[in-house]
Image (tube, rainbow, N blue to C red; front, top):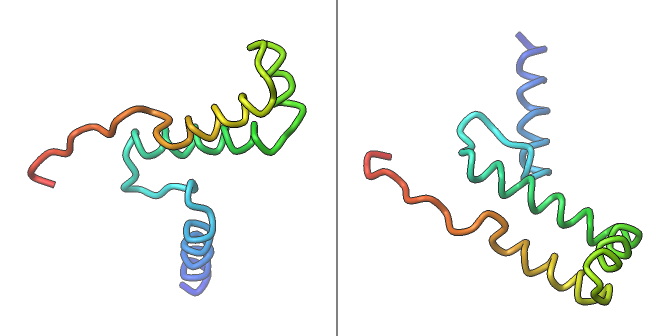
Length: 86
């Protein structure tokens, strides 16, 4: 019993620490947003990836970084409408 409680406590701690970890009630849209934001954060954090994108797009590195930051606001478009019963 204590092992299961300890495991649940660890999972809850990870979900609080890392927002994109997910849970049983996460929607497909929320999961996709987390994936896209994690990807853009990785691109911004690794300068070599930004350089690669800048060369491929023929844009300055600062512009590519700015575009990635802009895409983090709504990476998957507008959220779907929620059903009234929920």
